[in-house]
Length: 320
Ligand SMILES: [Zn+2]
Image 1 (spheres, rainbow, N blue to C red):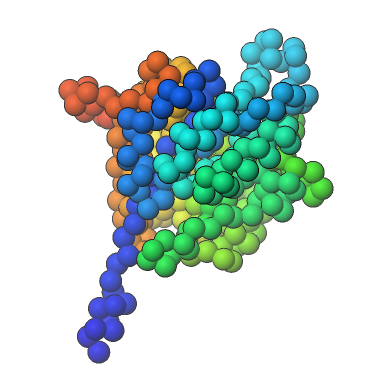
Image 2 (image 1 turned 180 degrees about the vertical axis):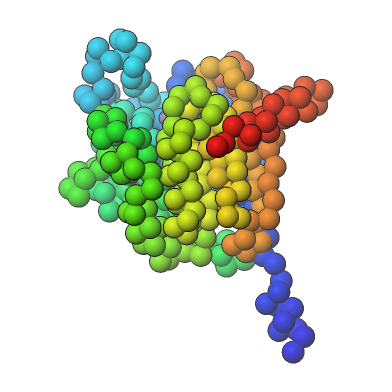
């Protein structure tokens, strides 16, 4: 009797290490910009980040972002040298593609990016050759048998804002766009989660949302994140503001509103998040501050780190 009970009670601990936006724009592929921090991701059972740039040699930018918008810096069109795949390979397991830059170099840019990731053995979700493919979860089975699925959505509030970023349709390629008619408590979220959980035991939902350069999540983000948890998601990983936003444990499940920039040419403070689970149950989390400087991701000195960490943890209090 006892050995069976012990088997059932044995926890299956695993870790998810998550980072923010990967923006290789203006950073040389051979500069190894992630080297200093990469081992933290490599040690994880699942290493996640948001790939906020197509890695492609495609030459024709999207026409949905107009010359006037680019000139006024209301929109940006980005791409990175395909050689950057070497900076991702072996470090990340899951990348989200549902963001406002994945389609900056059109279908060609998306397809080249996906082909490079596939060849490097990096799973991705949030973009595809049609909407069915874009919303399909990518599933990774851990050595302990737990099937971890991930779906990713660009969750901008406005239909026009989504359109600019080329959401996939039933017939055309693009990213997974979540148009809820500005209603974050929409019933549709339930159906999305139910469908995604059919083939996995644990579901990561990566959402691209919020307002740039804001440390406080919007009411829309908070209501939408909680809607996903209420609908059965196990963790929500947020991105887009290019700033850190707080975290909360909602009904026992973690929501991280924005994880800032993992790599960017702009100098800024950021963080890497470690989440621990026992089976499908969240157990604990921690953050380690990091920064971008000179186009590289770096740790803080042991002297500076505690004060920065306190500032980052204080952001949790802004969630309401
Ligand atoms: Zn973004």
